Length: 250
Image 1 (cartoon, rainbow, N blue to C red):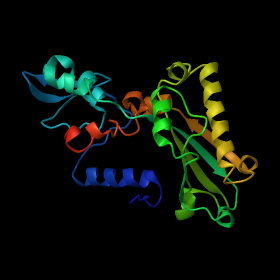
Image 2: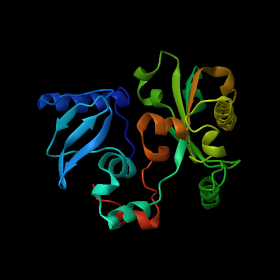
Image 3: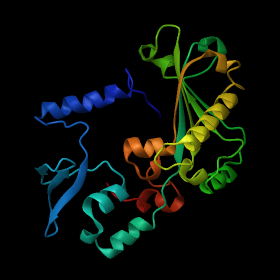
């Protein structure tokens, strides 16, 4: 099933840090790794953006395949058939996330912690439109109210609402401006936010007049903040050819 860490996602990160410190580990925040150092086919460590080098026998990378092997390791250290195997893989779609702070009485509306909304059951058609770089007029989305199961995530009588929908990375020329700046980018972002609120209002009447705070994240935002290639929310696409034995081993 789907589980939620009490106290928010930060509490999960805090547990990892606690374990790291317990075993005398050192945590470096806001520190970009720019290269995995290799000498004669063996791992030597990593190099950081400021030029520092850290020796290591083992390296665990939580970056995408493309980031790890193309950017950090380098194709010159890889076999041709391994490079071809990566290139043949299809990335998953990304998503658009709308974050809202609201003052609606959710319990009176009878809403659950998580609500899936499917305006049409022709999901294959929706998927083809998304893969083509467009967002369907009628799109499926998920509404999540973390504050319904964890009141600590919002002030008293207020709630958090996250609305998520699948979105293509190459929408309107990579969202009008690949670096996530410019008038065109903001226009596209605000337009999707407006559409999402309008669709959510079919389930939550008058939602727009109860919004205290709102912020949106596009696939460009996700790529910039997570460094995940094209903001792919699942890494590799979960297609029949890429599940089970079709995926790369950890």
